[in-house]
Image (cartoon, rainbow, N blue to C red; front, top):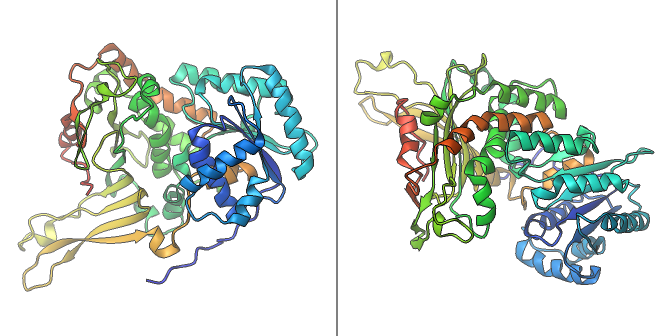
Amino acid sequence: MPKTEPLNSVGEPAPPCVMVIFGATGDLTKRKLFPALYNLAKANLLSREFAIVCTGRNDMTTEAFREQITTDIKSFATSEVDPGIWEWFLNRIYYVKGDVTNPESYQQLKTVIAEVDKNHGTHGNYFFYLAISPNFFGETVRQLGAAGLTTEENGQWRRVIIEKPFGRDLDSAKALNKEICHVLNERQIYRIDHYLGKETVQNILVFRFGNGIFEPIWNRRYIDSVQITAAETVGVEKRGGYYETSGAMRDMIPNHLFQLVSLTAMEPPTSFDANAVRDEQSKVLHAIAPLSPEEVLTNAIRGQYGDGEMGGERVIGYRQEQNVAPNSTTETFVALKLMIDNWRWAGVPFYLRTGKRLPKRVTEIAIQFKSAPLTLFRDTPVERLRTNRLVIHIQPDEGISLRFGAKIPGPIMRLGAVEMDFNYEDYFGKVPSTGYERLLYDCMIGDATLFQRADMVEIGWSEIEPVLDVWSALPPRSFPNYAAGTWGPKEADELLTRDGREWRPID
């Protein structure tokens, strides 16, 4: 099948700027940020007046740092590295040792940034990426402000990208928002969620609002239910210490999955302006009916993986992982049934599930439509009609599939289910991506559409807090309750069975 050329495939380069990376010696930087920035350079989306100042606790020179990332890029680049482009990119990277708790480090950093700004003509535009422990988010922003690095004047801009988790509950999220908003305006804050960097997630808005055949049926009259799955095959790996304080609920639901819920369920925005889109997302999150303590017991399922088999190999259970308590009650799986209490979605359940050590790595949104009346087929061998289902595949394969009924050839009226599949790569070719390219570019051009606003973060935490409160008061007695390599505890299946539904089978 010939590939279709994407519309507006060539974008304008971002404006001149300096990117400052805190935590530059960590995994995120070498695995995601540098490969993403290289891809932007290769696509001519970085300004020729661009530079990167990296800071971390390791004591090394700029030359040593450049050598290290040159080695790293060979392992983590998403496409073949062009020597000429890499040399151009590499010559714009600088390293300075720093301690995020030490005010003197920020004065040294300020001096280095000013020199780099002068040498590369970046016009005093800076953005800071906090690839550091969440414990230091507030402190780092305060120190940046005290050093005068967040002050905007003479048309210059200053922005800060903050990684998740943004708080660990409602109170801490409010406190962090208050702390950083003492220093920054909301328009300077970019709370990043890498899920929103995926093409299929961004395409939800185009799919819904750019196609006249779908929007009229995107409501309670035609849709029976919505399922959102974010499954991982990996365990906690070396993040047991972090995961013990987080769990699947805090790690995935108020950010990743609620973002997918809001994009799926939002009303049409007045424009693609960042606040117009986020206003509608915020309304959806506000409309999610909070679970009562009684509803938590039936509509919020938690699980923890035990040992099992993955890919033909035995794997250990969560409690045997490094830095995990032997009697841990931390959940590695969550399934929720939520209702959105507004005109469009009244009575339509949204089923969410996420977990580790599940059989397949997949993220998808499945829209289950209501069945057509069987009356027409009452005098035929057709006993039931398969419902129509639309699936938005987010990872690992990006695309959209639609299931509908068709007559099986022959003299007898028999119906079969037919799948129509759209795959991004088939139509538009494979685009090298880490998922961070669009988000970094958007920060450079000042487009916050794909970043969470303060109110959205707080609403997300407020929705899950009743669940966390009940779970804290009633520790699980059945952990571990699902084997690695299975689709979670049986209670997750029962969550849908009670409603006469089932999870979409994922092959």
